[in-house]
Amino acid sequence: MKPDLIICNKEENTQEIVLACQEIAPTYVSDIANLEDAMEMIADIGKMTGTSYKAKSLVNAIKINFNHFDKESLNSLNALYLIWKDPYMTVGSDTFIHDIMERGGYKNIMDGASRYPELTLQNIVNLNPEVILFSSEPYSFSESDKKDIEDAFAKAELKSPMLLTVDGTYFSWYGSRLIDAPNYFKKLRSN
Image (tube, rainbow, N blue to C red; front, side, top):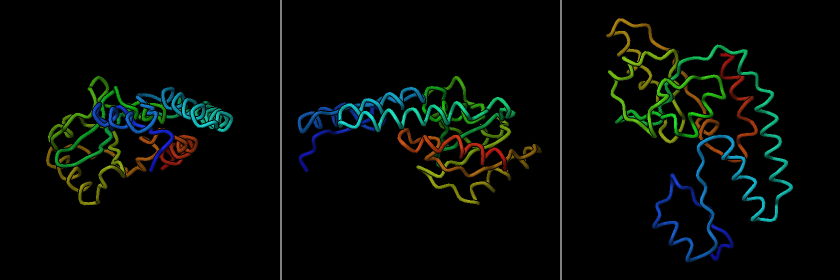
């Protein structure tokens, strides 16, 4: 393919993969933990590809949209964000998803945990979140997955949390899609 540039991500690519890529072409490795890191990556790639103006415009639009999103007017809900099943996996506070959750008005109930903790159904019940956000990707949760959660809370004689399937791309993709994320959160919170 003879690329002019290879873009890797620290979380997605091993050191061996990055080293192999560097043998082929200049390689940029992103390490994205929050919105600021994502905007820095967009600007960096703009510089490397001769599209700085477009990148700066995109970064400015993302900043404006997030600055105009009034999460302070929302009640922050204690939320559990699920990304996987068998085992259930969620997100810790050192992830990009955590940062975006907080910006969207969801208090990550796993604040303080690291990376992607595994949970049992009983752990989820014990956490007793107000809302569970079922990500649409990388695992596609089904209605029967939601039923499993409802049944576990019923068995524990607890009120089931609000169960929402969310578009995971707005929580986890750290590129141009961020421009629309605040509007998505407004719609999600209005349900």
